[in-house]
Length: 380
Image (cartoon, rainbow, N blue to C red; front, side, top):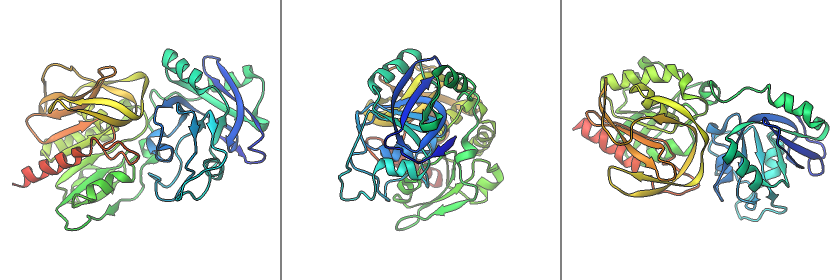
């Protein structure tokens, strides 16, 4: 990525997809060039949480909502210490943000952090194209980086693909840190950071859990050195087929029968640990309005998603695994994609979405209570 921040408001920009489709607009944020996987997010709010979600590492996010940046940027809502998206695509950015918590505009924050974006394009047409053709590599070029489209297309087609990408260690913490319990401490949890969002340990801390957040490279011995009552595997970017180390650690946790909870990437890790495969979705699930049914209760939740891969597990039968019986516990009502797994013979479960959902909705917050119940049952 090369960056210049001169004249961002006026610079011409072009977005080039790997299949040759191009969209011309104006620079938004930093001026320069960037590459990544083009994906779309259907959320109408929560853009600040999206931008700072490490799961979006090496992705160029297209916002389907036409007006973006209306509430500016504040210092309370980021989910990590930086913006992780590789690029940002909007139709009609706010000219003047308006919110009592706003400290600066969204385009100022993108420019400050060197994130190349584009505005003024038909994001509806782009989204329809990605739905029909699937998520694909993309480049955004602005200012001096704009050249003839044939040259830019060749560069996009040389960029790395998401399939086979091992990214979790690039976004995870390098050193273990502790998020203390709020109020009386009830449990200790070892959380494997594969791209964790800040609100996740906070949601556990609200329930009296002291959370030790460990690097993605943590060994099984390092996990149990904190004497955990439960182990948590977080969300994160990349292809789960590359995550051999987290899978090995999770299998060690399952062998010890410690209460286990995984979300998003952690759900895919559990799937692999149980012997199921994973596969890439055509265009994935991203946004805060995805309907999921909890098959254990029959209830339907509106949930927050960000995933481009899924677990290949049978929907309507109990599977025998080396760790006991397993079943699909949650399913997406849009396309029947596996959205959760649970073991029937030991305390372990996972979901493919974000129960912490800082930008909302909060239908799935009960899953943290379910994790607490597993640890209470194990202690009893």
